[in-house]
Image 1 (cartoon, rainbow, N blue to C red):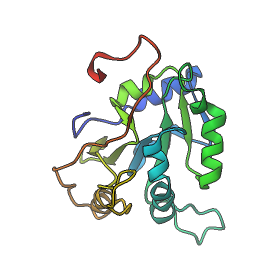
Image 2: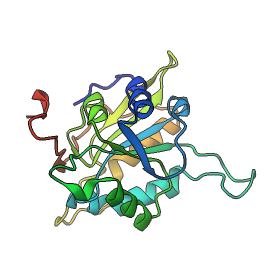
Image 3: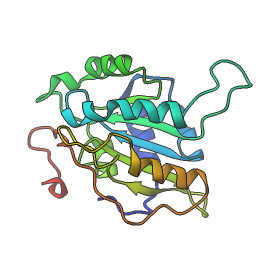
Image 4: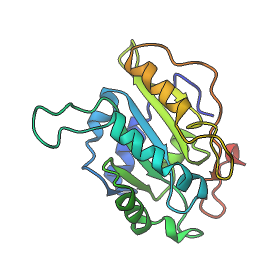
Length: 207
């Protein structure tokens, strides 16, 4: 897992976008320079994974609860949490996770946050993302750098079990960040489908 305190890999995001290897497939226009200015939740997801399908309603609720945008005039609140979704699955093995599939997924769920297709899988490597869904929460630190404060499960809910899908773990981390409090150090890893690496390109740490 990416160590807590790791700086947001901002350079990797901007480089992949500028080179066209990563591209936005849906959502409000991404302004990369704003990513490190406040709390940021990065979600590695995809269109086909049953674990992602299971948490889609909670992702939608997170958007509604924490990332509302001032779309209807200046009186509306600015977002308190930025969301960014990334899909890194190889379309050689899973074509349903290509840009069209991701765009259709976002439209079904009403997601307005930026959704990136990571064609070269460089972003998955930069974050050491292992599965879908795999959330990473960053917050500005005292040194002015946006650093990782949480990486782990949404909650204990899984497809087929009886635990409620309530985002208990990720919500507790977000609430702590927004309150200016430390995030609990005990964090349970995310569980889901492995990221589908391009054939023959799976990184050693993901094996």
